[in-house]
Image 1: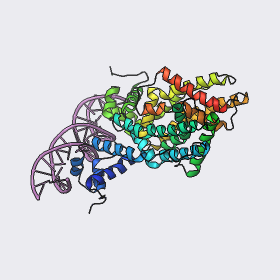
Image 2: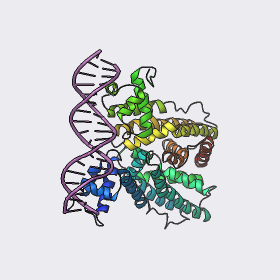
Image 3: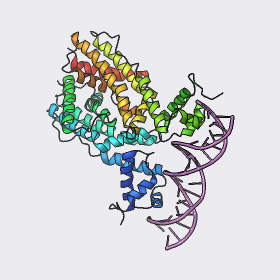
Image 4: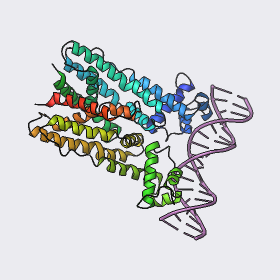
Length: 202
Length: 202
DNA sequence: GTCTATACAGTGATAGAC
DNA sequence: GTCTATCACTGTATAGAC
């Protein structure tokens, strides 16, 4: 009769509780007591599954990166209608990176990357690197179809991502404005696509 | 005969030591003992000047934001030679935000903004907001001189900043690559200016 | 594997002498 | 203001019973 006994046993419920706690407060502000209590197990059980707080933290964050960023896709887009396709792509991207959990993950990892250098690489590979690769694949097809004129697709992908992310992402992670709604996202994407198309449309 | 007695007295040496410690390890990984030892004073002296660890942290970070980002300027640029001017501007911007202290500051603030919400605003006002405003001022003059065609100078400033920052900044804060040298900075700026000029040159 | 109970180190903060 | 010495507390981690 534990509080948060998830399907898959106690290991899973520990990971779930740890995820919530770490994402909400970071590494330092969370105690193993809290995690154990919230998972509905004893502290000794936590240590039976994860040798230390560091190990648990690494497991949680690594898994979150994989789970969270895996679904991003640049498929089902028409390479000839670049404007519409880039808008959809930009929207998918921005919605993903502005989601509350993604923002929290971003904050935690940056704050702890000095103590956990491996996490920076994990995050980079799971998120930005993959997103950029998929976006580049689309840009390549759009260039092949003649709709875009791209001197360097790799760099163009970086610029597209940067334009879409803009400053709204930074404002969100810094908490200087309330979470972005659909309208703000649509507006930011539209502006980014405009500029990108101005630069690279044939 | 203290270890780090800075000119200006003990308060200053405490701030200096605290700055080094916090920037290197964040809030949680640093103890008041460490700071006191490194400043060459007793812990009681630290508490005589700053009522709590939180207060000291806030003082350090707030001061660092002001000191560090104040010098950024968009002056002494020729509005008619946009390509050269934007290159200089982009270089100043990127060198500033990629400097080791700026990167460390960025990490700390993002990691602790949940616990210290005010710091996000302080950082934003001192850094990104100011930089963007000054860059926009230049863009406005360039548009007035007829060299650029900008439908929205505010948005154009955001896009310029985003293009210049690119992904190199993210790679640096995530520690997935070694600190950027002059060549990488010059390359990133050149690419960003190219794209921006393609989009907005008259 | 899981629990209760506890060891042990390190933390932020303070009292009291000077 | 500054020091030394100390407090009260919380944190991680583990021993031992089941």
